[in-house]
Image 1 (cartoon, rainbow, N blue to C red):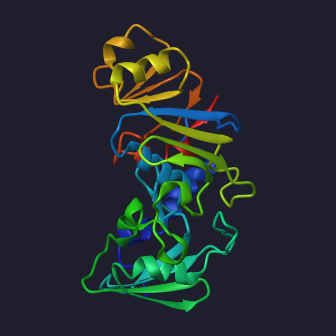
Image 2 (cartoon, rainbow, N blue to C red; image 1 turned 90 degrees about the horizontal axis):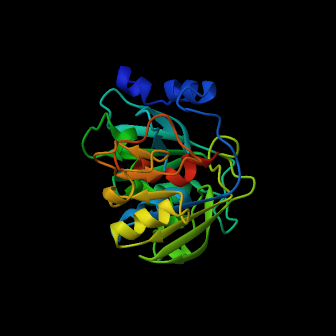
Length: 273
């Protein structure tokens, strides 16, 4: 099997790994500790961020748009980009203590084609149609790896391999995740000791919660409530204000473009300064 072109080579994650090693994608040095608190509207935001905190995928799109491995350490494809092989990490456990098994990955990849285990840490996927961009597809949270394909709901019982384990959750209302000790990403992600997501339907109340220090990040807040607070940061800008961020929050220099909440990875990538 061979890598097929520059895009596939880039998809190996080598370029992203170099960026991560040099810290080139971060505005500041991340710091550990504290509870990162988010206020979000009553939409899919809570589930998006909670999934990013609790579960991993085979690949991940970094904030700067590069692709890197997550549960996969590398991948290869044939000349037609129809048969793919993924090498899996060996140091991964689910939050219930079970070791990540190749069968867990096969159960998820079977949704895309015919998957089979070639070894305890190698899986092969044969697609019906060629797809050179498959590693990018697998970064989507539709393909999070769960225990034997058990799924991600209900949220309070979610069992993943991510940086944060569910401590308390009410679907559509509240989520509290606690950092997993000894996680394979320790030192590179999962900076906060805990992440709390609170659903506040009213945009004005979300803005007030941020302004008064009850939360650290507010999604889609009422702009008029925050424009005079110059110490706050706004993403993408003050006129749009998809996110408003307290000055004590550290964040990547770039934010994933697929979703305002850093592609659902705020809990993993952001920190308290």
